[in-house]
Length: 386
Image (cartoon, rainbow, N blue to C red; front, side, top):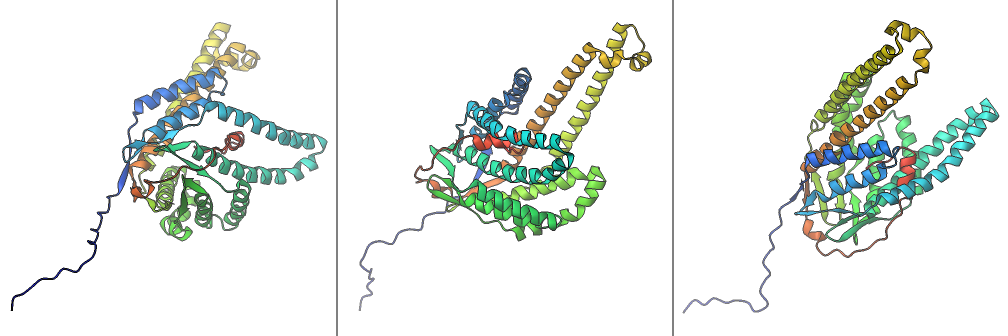
């Protein structure tokens, strides 16, 4: 009897598709170009008495967004400086009456001012959280990747209420509840964040954050007492927070992962401290030189110049001091933006990996543009992130 092979009838079985490898995030920007952008912007901020900062923030975001590459494609920032300026002016028109009412209450009676201080602080804290949420919403709707815009829904007031209640719990627990606060707020923000029709979510937990960073809570009192330890503690905390936050982000089946080391950011903070010290010494030397020159022109010795009224009434000295202070402040802004914005951005990106990016291949564009009022509130309350 001959052996016969038999093949069952039916359609051929599909071959399993290979799983695409994780996609690292890259940055293609030039540090020299960014430095020139910041220095030019600082000079224009000086000339325009600070109003150029809205256009500078827009230029910085365009530089960082466009040079952040995922699968070879950079993001696009579509916001405009004019939008930020208008949002700031509208926010200012709302905030100024609040400040004015508090000032008038203080003139009315000191006890009224003391009574009003606590509600005022509480109001601005809640309002600041609202501004943070709305500013994030604005930035997200101005971010486009592969022709599809990110967008955001949700209520800024609900977020502000949650943030305030969690803030009270953090205060009562001396900071121990902070990881759970961050996790709860991130879940709310990501649940209302979208890439086209792809909804976001956040998988990080407060307990996971606490396990990674609990020892920093023990070291914080020592860092506050001996400030030399502060950059180590804060740098390690921020690195842990970045890694935890990035690894929890999801958009549908797309997920991020970070391998950022705890020591990755400490050097940046020490560089900033070194530059601040150096610039402070230079500024002090400039003050002494200006005082010596003005005293020499006045025909007085340094000791006599300080003892007379000429020191307090010298217009040339005052003008030189103002110019020096502005140059010192703008130099600090350049240092902060280079090290704690661009360099930190790159270190965080270099540790980031995107999994299942193919799940975002067939996304449908959705969402509406948000106005810049939230960004204006955040700027007016000095709570603006980036």
